[in-house]
Amino acid sequence: MISFQKLFELPKEEEEDFTFNEIEEGIYFRGHNLWLLVISMGIACVGLNINSSAAVIGAMLISPLMGPIVGAAFGFSIGNRHLMRLGIVNWALMIVVALSSSALYFLITPFHSETAQLESFKTATIFDCFLALLGGFAWFLGIVRKEAIKVIAGVAVSTACIPPLCTAGFGIANGNWEYFWGGFYFYLINCFFIAVGTWILSIILGYQKYYLQKNKIKNQKMSLFISLISALILIPSILLTKKKWEKEKFNERSESYIKTIKKNHPELAIISHEIFEENGEKYLKITLLNDSATISKGRLDQHNSLVKDIHLIWQYSPNQQNAESPKMKDMQTQISELKLEIERMKTKNNNN
Image (cartoon, rainbow, N blue to C red; front, top):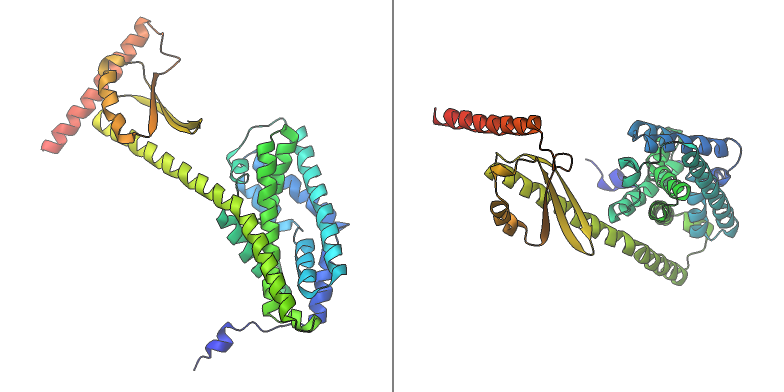
């Protein structure tokens, strides 16, 4: 018979003192660890700069970011002020080195565009908080086990920290404070919830009992304090999650509208469409090929009722708006004829 208690229990595979020494040793940020961070930041910056997810993942594999965070959280859990102080000092040093490295790269590089990779790490959502919490669990479980799983746990946690710091560095280098504060907040919530995961598991696994006498009142106050701080930190991420969800819905509705227009008016040449918000209002800008003879504006306006809360902006392609050359007119005629021929063929096939 399978014992469910043994199936889910978390036995310690190391002595408490051995784990303590291992965590304390991982806090120090100097020598190899310092240069590994500089190198990993460089690799991540290149990946974000050229939109290469492979380079970003490569940086995550070698980044030594989590030692000070876990050390400070573990020290807080067991009431060891020396460990807390050591973790916070090395964590601050790590932030300074990481931001300096990434900002220096983005100052030197000739590419300053806001890539999709950079964009994705300037907005933290509640899901990122949850991911960081799970990362904290994974890291601490790796610490209290034997060597085999520690690298995997370290990688799982580091994935959440390197790119946001690089994004913050991009913001510093380009004077873009939206990217700086977005990336830095992303990084801070990751650090905080990784620390919370460490704190929770250190209590569950009995490390607090080992280093401290049981003090229910103190533990209750500590739990209440961490819960309040967690709630305060979560508020911006919840708002950002809501904003991101609304943007996704806006995009979905716009795509649905474009599909409806194309279905009802296959002769209409839609070159591109763009969504944006201004003064709290939603706008959908649709660019058409300059063949206004094919459909009237009145017919297009009939479809505005499909998206009552979205303002539609119809425009002809700027490069062709004033084109009156015979070649352009001939090309537009050919396109219109081709569309009509395609529709006739579709109708014929459907009848057959």
